Image 1: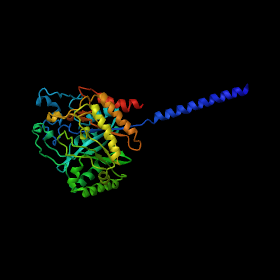
Image 2: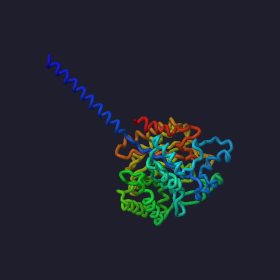
Image 3: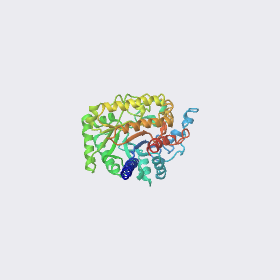
Length: 402
């Protein structure tokens, strides 16, 4: 009888031990839930009293002027979006602090600033310098730069944008001397900032228009030399290297009318030779027909993810666009249909699955965008969907990840 009791208590102890270990494993798993870097492109044209913006938007409120004047310019036009927060000045640090709080609460923890350089000097930098970097809660949010080195034509100026005149106001091309000036300035001013987004300690720097870069620097070989020099300068500054990020393109579906011409994706050997270590997209409109239903577009997006995996050696970070419709600028536009917060959430799930299937790279997903109102691809709350897009991000990357 005693031996039976001993066996019983031994078995009970073993079962309790197994249960304890399982519980510990579950607790450990819950404490190590995967975190994601959700990076939204931020278009810095919603700044007040920036003198360099007034030639395009003379009222002094940046491109909010385009958003506000749609019905005045095109009476009865279907596009009548209104920002819940009003026409905010994103170059105001208190405003940006509010945006950082809302963004991070909903899972957006990186801003990718569209960064411009024209006429030998920076353009649209006030939102970054005066707003974001001076916000009292900037430590909550990482940032990095996408050099938007495309040509500028009449598209931003709605007084003449309908004329469809291919006037180049500013070129995105720079020569070697100016390139070095830009790189040194960005290393010192931004890369060294504690909130600058880095992968394996390397500052991430995204370049939008590779043909413009090559043409300005004087050809492929000179561009290779310049980019090699850039990485060496990053190493001199104390970084282990540079994460040079390519903006992926496909066939030319340049609906915005202000970007440089593109014909096909750079091929694998070219990308490898250039030294790009990662890539993402800026917009669905850059590689597929967006004048249709959102979920139809997502079928092409999944194919694009797969194509890039099979074609390139670099690390691809999946991209999700909220939508597309730039008729506030030029009245006529391709329009993404049915891009509801619910369908946007489904797209996020697809991107999340891609990240989970690529555990050897940063858990980075890019989104177009935080505030591209005049291209109708924004996360900020509006009169149509409220906070729906932000809530979709929160559901997928915070609530479902608890």
